[in-house]
Length: 258
Ligand code: 13P
Figure 1 (cartoon, protein in one colour):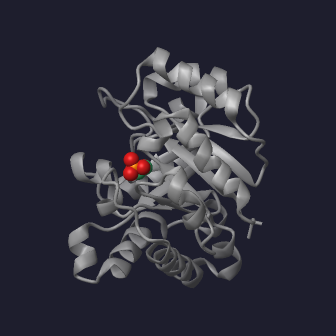
Figure 2: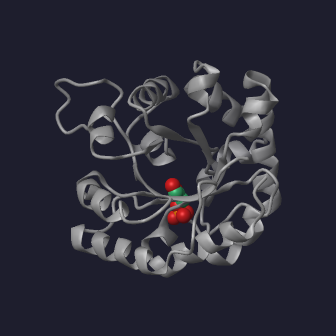
Figure 3: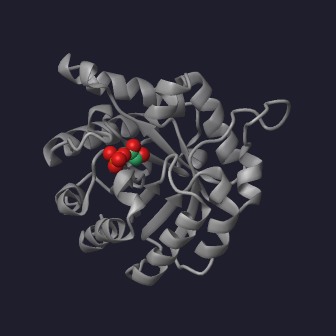
């Protein structure tokens, strides 16, 4: 049974007291989750200690981080390692977000190293992929995403790959209010699963959660999550408001677990 996941990516938003208040509101309003229908909250690094304490009181709500460095330790001023995150109770790390790729020059080779660091430290990866509008307009989005998966993840053996969650986030839908249609999301998610099947076999591919991200809101979440290969969402803007985020979590809970 594969997991349905709704993950909050706060990006570079909220100070410590705002973050504490948001998690408190989530605590008060979160519907009942389970091992197979769970939530991840990925705040900025400075929130992690505080968020770990707060989330420890919530069942099936896991702490995430938005990035880590690709080396284990050393003279990399300003960076944070995977082992630091693991020691701070982080369980999921987002790797390869399009904003990291675009603004911080992260390429697939670097991302493959980051993936290794996260997995070597016993955490799970939320690996982001997705095409620009230019690529979609050229009709080459399937090949684009396949290359991201191959170069970022396909060096992994099956045992490690089982600890990866994929997030498909078309760049043209992020923060734009322009969501992919349910059909566009399903088509890409089915493509991703077929690529995973060719590499890892159907049993492994069927067990991997593939999340959709990009202007996901309570009003469109149910339709997206009803798609056979959409296993939840990675939420940016709407994760900053407890009511909206809980609305999206509720939409996940209403869908059948595959
Ligand atoms: P928005 O939900 O704000 O479009 O952001 C999506 C995203 O990038 C999540 O990682």
